[in-house]
Image (cartoon, helix red, strand yellow):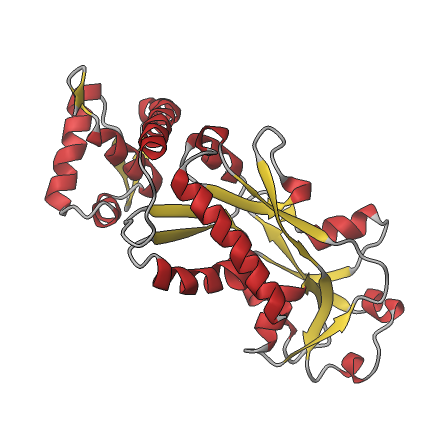
Length: 305
């Protein structure tokens, strides 16, 4: 379909190119050959009179003009998707839709991995892209580059819809052979030990446990700050370090690593996890279905704990 001489399919190509900044990756994602994708990029360049992407060493970088177009293109794509979604029913058994979910790797491990296993049976052609939360995640949600964002309530964007997904306790974790786990761990031991913690994104945003401690006027002695929850067990094994971790994640990790789990020996707040989406897509049948499946998986996980 054309509008004022522009093939509207090129808007999707533009969005993918701007996200991947790679002709080969964009071609793979869009199921096109590289020559076909290169031809589409040439048509975009001809239409807008701009290079769109330029080579910079081994990378491709967007031009300033392309950056200025991106929010408008994504808003247009979101409007088109919303129009199509509200006029068609969603059938998970036959849908070939791609959903982009943004969360911490804690949620990816503890919730999205079992969800993906369930969807492989119910929606075999549906594709999930699991993105790690970063500083630009809320902007990506607003621009339509992300479908759902899962984040603690303390960090939500108050201008966007937010639905409660789950409540999470935190626990103390450490190496199974750590002598501290030979008996009950008291508060003094927690604060005397060195700790591993996690900070998110380029700006190193504190995770919920560190934020909660700070609000309580408490601080642990941090020895290592990682960028991912997945590496925390490796930083605990063969040391006397501790970490405060989500209980669901700790239970999953204890199945694969020699780590021990103990109760936090003082009052600690429960973390509320929320799922956010763009208000223009609140009635999107596919996203309504996916949010329902997220809630279903949360309940299944709870029953198996």
